[in-house]
Amino acid sequence: MKIGVIGSGSWGSAVGNLLATIGHEVHMYTRSDEQYHRMKEFGDNPHYLKDFYFASSVQFHCDFEEAAQDVEVLILAVPTAAVRESMEKIKECESRAVVVNLAKGLEQGSHLRVSEIAKEIIPENPFVVLSGPSHAEEVAKLLPTTVLVCSEDEEIALKIQDLFTHDAFRVYVQDDMAGVEIGGALKNIIALGAGLSDGLGYGDNAKAALMTRGLTEIQRLGIALGAKPVTFQGLSGVGDLIVTCTSTHSRNWQFGNRIGRGMDVEEAIEDIGQVVEGYKTTKAAYELANDLGIEMPITEKLYNVLYGGLEPRRAVLDLMQRPNKHENEKIFLL
Image (cartoon, rainbow, N blue to C red; front, side, top):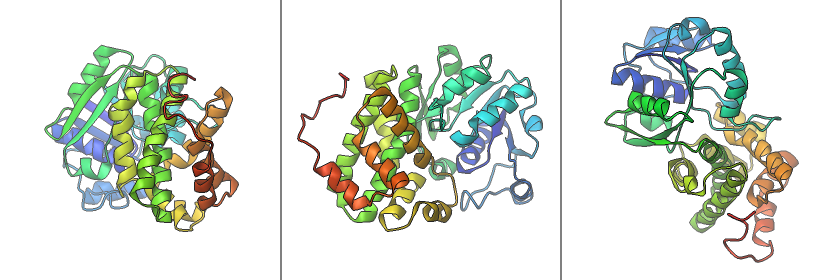
């Protein structure tokens, strides 16, 4: 199958290379002239992936329309902040390709999920989300990985499931778009908190509690938006939460860890050198929760740390000193 990959960061590179390894014709787009020449000449992408080389069949482009021309599937491998612009370009190209989104976040200001942006800009393109516990660094090495694809059209979901299937890449099908997207976006917030906790030296007990209660917050918001509770027990919920909160591959964990060790926000972002989705998603989720009247204390305190200058240890103490509650309070019954 002829496939276009829009975005050549770590995740786009790993996924594009996986598809080429499977045997698909892959056309990869980058907007950076420097990165284009590097990939074309040396076949690697060292800024994003170390000790990695593309399959020789991958074709590189610095022209969006050229990369998207006559493809059957377009992989959208850009940060959430660039999704709208990328979809506008897809619309301009008059492409009717299936769009497979890899971004995990909420749009700033509108608080829209990526599928909602797609319905607004490219409603005629079949839309699929690929999500689940999957670090680019491990997919690039073809280490065993299990993910899911989600679409409102089951036939399209099954088609994309087959597209991605590989001995090292197992794919399940889901139909709960709200649950998959909220789980994928908000786990970045909790992973940021896990990194912060580790940076403060608080240990495994604190991180386990943070992950568990963080999942409760994800469920609350997701269910309020129409998600199925069971979705959060799956790959795009607890699965993605585990891998992102416990691995040093996670940029969200790395970012929070730097904040916990005393860096300020701008310094931490610059030090990582790549997009940290959880930073902006914290703001969007905090605002959305306030709009809906959803209680999300961990998200609120992380927002206060990142955007309000609250001292991290004070934030933890505030959470620990909250009034006593029943564990299941306000999870499924809002």
